[in-house]
Image 1 (cartoon, rainbow, N blue to C red):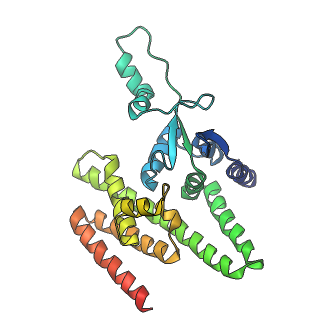
Image 2 (cartoon, rainbow, N blue to C red; image 1 turned 90 degrees about the vertical axis):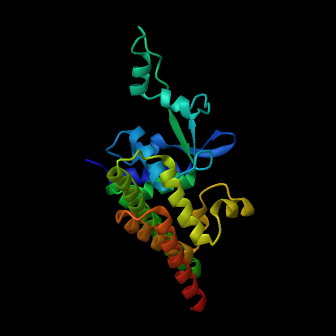
Length: 265
């Protein structure tokens, strides 16, 4: 039986004490997050799916290393060679297959928190509540900060749920179309909604403001509210098999209307 209280305590301790793992950057091994969350799926399947769903960016939100005793950055081809299926296929004519490499994803603190919030099991729900309760404690000290922080956290949690709806819709769309699903099918949709929230191309905005990590971490409450609306609407339009350019036009109209209403308020 899972001890929810103990698991929550271990996860919060993990987040509070990151390790200095690569190039002076503090990070957490995603294997530890997977283990403490008691995820049912195997680690490799889980972390790759979550990266796609959340739109995490390599070398910003995570890095891939061969092992933790001597971290060595791997290329995409190195990662593919680590797959036991591919390794077997490539070496089936050999008397001895190459030793399988151990792949680790080292993630930033924000990415680790995001992964905890994405998980829908009992421990994931407990972590969600932990973050909300931690921010409620601010009420006794700085009520204004409390209200703003709690509202942003709640909006972020809802945005995570809608982001999953959108990525699930993308996956189902390409299955219906009988087409191969590629990583850029997710990234272009993430960039579309983020750009509409910002009012300009998200890549240009990040370069202008020197942002290297996830741009959504810098969104205020109103921007998070717009993000939720765009994610939810985009998922619905994808489920209707609406082509990308048509969806983009509809989302632009929705974004402009929302922003106009905010200015008039």
